[in-house]
Length: 356
Image (cartoon, rainbow, N blue to C red; front, side, top):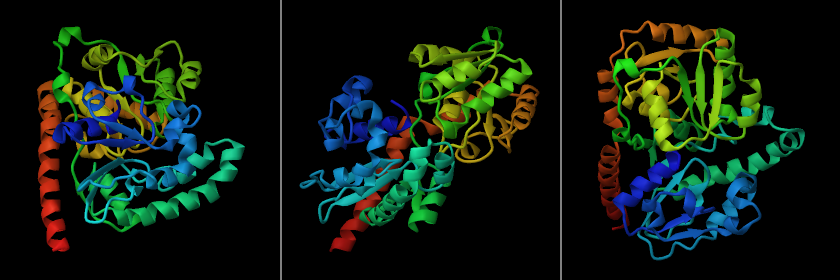
């Protein structure tokens, strides 16, 4: 139940009778709201180890998506940071794509992913990515209207698909978080999120190792063991934690550390909803949610020195938890549902005029 799943969950509230189509479905990992819907999986879901190794089946996903039978639907909403928009909608149906990002691993971060891959993957990536990239650009023509989760992603859509997009920020359950009195604050900084390379978690660990400052890291992912081996005595790598533990640590941290370039970044808003400041890399979606010098500080280079300097500046902020909470609450779930409802209604109106 990460950001993409939270968007699907909110769309399920908007359309309680909707059917869901996806590659892989693990009911136990989903919320009751999603489980209440009829879910159909592509043939990817029946392949070996698909629940964990679904990313390895990327070359098959275009074919799997095109085999999904969407006959009878008048509205198709694809939610994607991968190839989900490549479904074939019925003639006359309206197709809206809520885009978290064009596929990073074949577009804006292709060289980063290839550089960090093993020898076989590095060798296979150019021809496979060329095929995926070509199909992905062509399949953008199957979308009538794009919604981007941030201005950063809207710019990528213009760059790669030559398509304009309306920006509607994703839903953040800000009501689930709250600040604590100053006397309950801890002596640690916090990093939260999936531990994958593009999020640069090792940068935070290296910085806090050097400075001898306390850092708590919450999240699972492919880099979990690597980070545990890298962590010094002042860094705790807790792995995945229950939601109650996440709430507790958010509210008591000195500040959240956000070292990667994100498409949007729900985690900083959860921290601000908890009344805590954010130290973030000054690119990507964080620049649209963190107010530099008010709700946090930015660092402009992904280096240990730049990060530690931003941590120091953050510690000297005249910070108001009330302002941070008020700012975060602008991104709530009700706002997302209302904006999407209005956008879809307008899109239907234009679509019907075009058909007539």
